[in-house]
Image: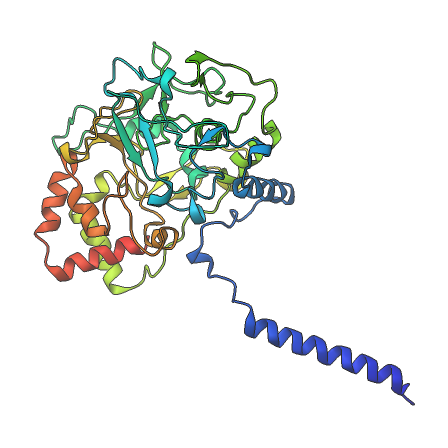
Length: 411
């Protein structure tokens, strides 16, 4: 068989170029990250249609808004991802400031003056807000986003079963569910439990004042970015005139875009454990239980039914009870939301804790406002219902303290 030499030579050159290109790419391009070290992949088991919607929501989550596309006129940040870097905890550069409510009876009396969120940035022609005189306030680090689809689906009956508002078992822990009124545009879950005053169990936000991820996203678009939806106008109140505004006839984003964003958050893969077979991590896990940390940071929860099959009736490990707890005077900022007392905070999920440094510029900024610069410092700030556990931690040897921290970093 005779070869066509010119054609054979051309094909050979192409093959060589492809091989060199592949070698170069493998040398120059970074390797794909270990799935255990990132927080932005979708849940396993999504259908092709769901994956498309996930990607649409991902693009919306990363969208950087401008004045022309709906930013402002006053705002905190220009995108969702700028506060939730890597879908993990936020950092001090995008700290949120909430203000206005100081007790559980008066509500937020500063709504007409910009409450509940300080929007200090602004587009040309406007002026950013300042905290009004006399308003209570607190600073908040954005929470972790990954895994929230599981948290949304924990049955309300399970949360009630975990609660012990009067501390009947005398263990010093009196966690309670957060009963709040919800906006008229929020649709309660099927078979939702409510009080005779139409208050529902809320679970999102530092004070557990938000009902579901739909409400969370609508409020975040509005209060963080100044983006309107068909559910919330540019601002719930016209801050310049002090009058209420309900202009939602021309929203900045469509319902389909909002729904895709909600779906993206619902179907983000939960943070995965790392090094759980390490001897120090195993011992640290035992210490976590011995110190009764798991009384509030409950290891395992289970979802109820979901139309998203991969989320339905699944066990997961967030290390939270989603309840409100009195955390003592050091964490009492004098500000509150809904029916939570100023010293009460929702138990923060611990999953993703070991990865939060990546999202926080190489440092830890822990607790609700980022005041703790290390895991040990965060433990030492715990008070109120967590005092006994903190005191047990203080009594540990240095070696055991490090084993406990190794366990927490594995989450």
